[in-house]
Structure formats: C-alpha cells, structure tokens
Image 1 (cartoon, rainbow over the protein chains, first blue to last red):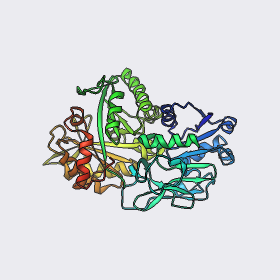
Image 2 (cartoon, one colour):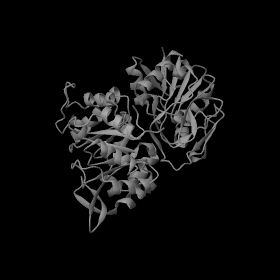
Image 3 (cartoon, each protein chain N blue to C red):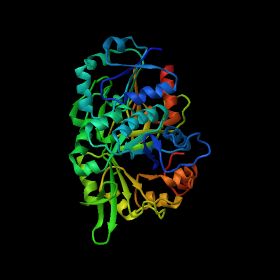
Image 4 (tube, rainbow over the protein chains, first blue to last red):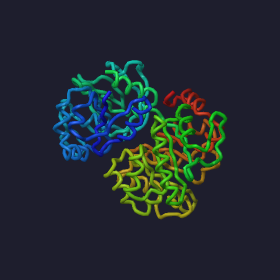
Amino acid sequence: MNLVIVDYKAGNVQSVQFALERLGVQATLSADAETIKAADKVIFPGVGQAASAMAQLKARNLDKLLPTLEQPFFGVCLGMQLLCQHSEEGDTDLLNIIPLPVKHFETDLKVPHMGWNQLEQLTSPLFEGLEEQDYVYYVHSYYVPVSEYTIAQTSYPAPFSAALQYKNFYAAQFHPEKSGPAGSQILKNFLAL
Amino acid sequence: MLTKRIIPCLDIKDGRTVKGVQFENIRDAGDPVELAKWYAEQGADELVFLDITATNEGRKTFAQLVRDIARHIDIPFTVGGGISSVADVEVLLQNGADKVSVNSSAIKNPQLVEELATHFGSQCVTVAIDTKYKEETGWKVYTRAGTIETEHQTVDWAKQVVELGAGELLLTSMNNDGTKAGFALDITSEVAQAVSVPVIASGGAGSMEHFADAFLKAHADAALAASLFHFRELAIPDLKNYLKAQGVAVRI
C-alpha cells in the first residue's frame, strides 16, 4: 500500500510514522502534491496552533490540494480541526472540507483537556474491534461539537466530536499513535478501509 | 471520564537509566526503552524522562534515545533536563517527544515559556517547578536542581508561567521528595486550584494512599513517582485498582 503522511512542519509526523512502523507499514513523508495525489491513503497529523499550521499548508499550496483528494484520508488532532470551517483559535479560516466550527473549551475543568478519556457512541468501521468506553489519549484546548458527521464522542464535561467522517475524510481529535493498543487498532482499521 | 494519570519518571544519564532499577522481567533494566515498554504494558499513563547528563556528548545521546523511545512505545512521554532554547525543543519534538519540561531555564528567562508555546503550542510545554517550604519564606521556588532559592513565591510563579503559555505544571516538593511520607498536599492543592492547566504532583509518594490523597484531597491531575515504581515497592496495576476502589477515575 502506498501510504503518505502529509509533512508540513506542523505535525508530530515522527510519532505517526513510528506507530505505522509498529504495524509493519512503511509510510512516506511528503508535502509534494503529486506524491500525495498518488497515495492510496493519506494521513494528516497536526499539533500546535491552527493559524500557524494553516500558514504552513498555504506555503506549500496544500490548502488547495487537500480538499480535492478522494482516497481515504485521516486527520489527527489538529489535523482533524484543520479539515473544518473555522477555528476560534486565532480566529482562523480552515480548509473548509467539513462544514463544522472549532471552539474553545469553556469549562471549569482543566484546559487543555489532557490525558486518557473514553470513547462513546462508536458508529464507524474505524472502531472495529473497540468497545464503548475504551480509552484514548487526548491533548487539546479546542474541540469540534457533536454533529451529523460525528462517528465517536467523548465527554469533557459535555460531549464533543472524538472522531468525524465526511465522505472520504476521516478524522480523530485524540492521538491514535499514542493511545496504546486501542489506538493501534484504529490505525489498523483505517489502513483496512 | 478523563482519568487521573500515573506517571513513572526515569532519570537518564548518558543514555542509560540510573537509580539501580531492579526488575526480573527485563533483560536490561538500564535500557530506558526496555523499561519504558514494560511500564507502558503495566498501565502507566505517561512517562517522563529526565536527562541528568551534563555534557554535550550526552545530549546527543539523549536525542537519539528519545527517537528510540518514540519508535517503541505507544503512550505519550515528556522529556526534560537542560532544555534552554527553541532549538533544543525542536530536536526533541522532531525525534518524537510529545512534551518537554523546562525548569531552571524558565526561571532564568521566563520569555522562553512564551516562545516555546508560540512555536510549538502550549500542549507540549510543561513547566517543572521545584518548591520548598521554610517557615520564614513560605513555599518558594528553587532552581538549579533545588540548590538555589529564587525570589518567586510558588503560587505566583505557577500563575505567571501559565499566563506565559505553559500547558501543564510538574510540581515537586523538595521537602517531601525522597521521604515516602506522601505528596505535599497543601501546596499541590493551592497550585492546582490557582491555575487552569493540569498539575502533576511529585515528590514523596510512598504508598497507594498517598496517590489517592493527591487526587482526592489536593486536586492533582496526575501523580509522578520514580523509585517507588523502579524498586517495585508499588505495582501500577495494584495502584490503579486501589484508586478505582477509592472512587478515583483511572484507566484500567
């Protein structure tokens, strides 16, 4: 399988690549349009701030390319948020692939939402082999509300989108590459889509 | 529900774990990767690696080690020790670290915290605070491995670094560290309630009850220990089962 991890200097690409390696899969790191277009599957990691990540994507013309992709695509953490319409973080316009907002947690609980929390209402082949209430690792201060595209939820304290699917675009707010066996299973499921 | 985190801390010198870790099941307990894998299997929620190497040569070894750890373990980990610039952090994150912790360098140059948060996001910036109580001063912040008293009151400093962009605090009480008499509940509670970011309690863990107290009485979000785990005085699965029975949300 020709698997490409989008490398735009705003991602924990190394951790994602290692996680795939542990599954016996070699992924190519690339920001090149032709390489990404030719991939069977694309993984889009991201950490850091929305505005600077968008600037990195624009600098590489990836903001034009990514919305046109048709193969199975997996956005992770900030990579999920970037697929949405607009983020409250830095009042940033995003890739606008999934028509959803990204909001800041307004709660008395600690922000960032950091640590292991539970998945609920799993409704996708992405979660084959997982059970309701399985734990995954989160670290984020912004979230996507629950919507018709939500395929898993987590509560902090209100439910938010743990994962999304819109056409060929899958996305997870948590870090499957850092979520132990449950996370590995999710990556494996994505590879099997 | 978001769970409280249990975090073993490993001291690294020249790429090897120190403190004479003893495990039957591990081929080479001096190998941080072997040990990290074992802890991940035991149910550790995160790991912290502190580089206590002082030489440049050792630093390169540490960056290589970070890469090896990231390659082999599937839970998050924080690295710290001797970090003083954006460039230092870039190397560690590129090699696969999830978070970095800064301590003395943040005291020397508080703007560093802001620079790191701007460059990499608050989510990967942990500020480590060594605190010590004396009757005449209250809880003051110490620097340089706890050898030098600073002018900062602990709660004020905690608020200041969070303001600058710290995404998490690692609070170590030097009065309690190594005593096995329990975490410093008063200052941990005060800091945890004064800031909006998660706080890791550190220093003094000696029993399962101490962890329950840190979470239930002092509002800590995570608790860290070193020798207690390394010397197998406390097994993580037992600890988590105990905490669950006490009503603490833990990942089992």
